[in-house]
Amino acid sequence: RSLNISGKKICIRNKMENYNNIFEEVDGKIRAMMTSKRYRHVIGVVETSSELAGIYGTDIEKCRIAAIFHDYAKQFTKAQIDKTIISHSVELDSLESESIQLSHSKLAAAIARNEYGIKDEDILNAIAFHTTGRAEMSELEKIIFVADSIEPGRKYPGVEAIREHAYCSLDKAILIIYKHTISYLLNSEHKIHPDSVIARNYFLDKSNEVNL
Ligand code: FE
Ligand code: FE
Image (cartoon, rainbow, N blue to C red; front, side, top):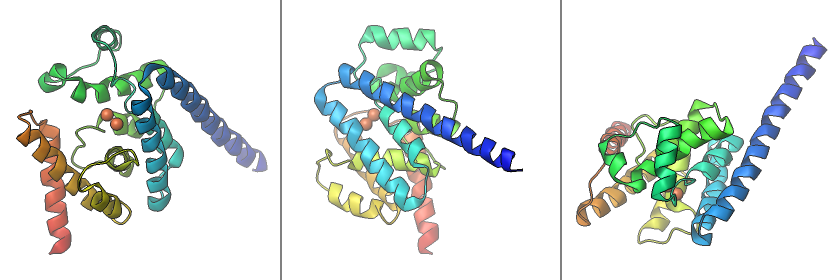
């Protein structure tokens, strides 16, 4: 029995060490690849998501890994984008194919899975849906989505209110983030991804149910 217990402990420790190694490797890679402003944003998301994970009792190691990967492909060249799509058979919908603003999330998830061996579907989904969000997000997905909008480097009118909500209710913070992002997309004549619209309606319904 004690052998089983110690065997289990070793297994858990190895998994943690693997994540640590991957974190360090990706950290070094993106530091060299990104502008310092983008890199500071990623580290901001790592720190904010860890903090939120502590508050909500979510796995901090998973948050750190999802956060360090999330914008991996944001500054890819056209050649890097094409290479990633082909080598990992990434399936993009028509809106994602038009814009790196949307596709970078899906590309980063494919790289995490295929180049770094990340198998945890929750981590991969948190990376893949960090830009649009989606209805019925897991807690990890919500934390990455929210941290991306409120990390300390984010400065826009209203960010303080979202930060305050984030520490009491992720759902409320998400609803306000959609209000900001969807208004911005409307006002700047950009297309809106259906996942964002569906998710916004879902969180609106959820908040109305709570208020009933
Ligand atoms: Fe992003
Ligand atoms: Fe980001």
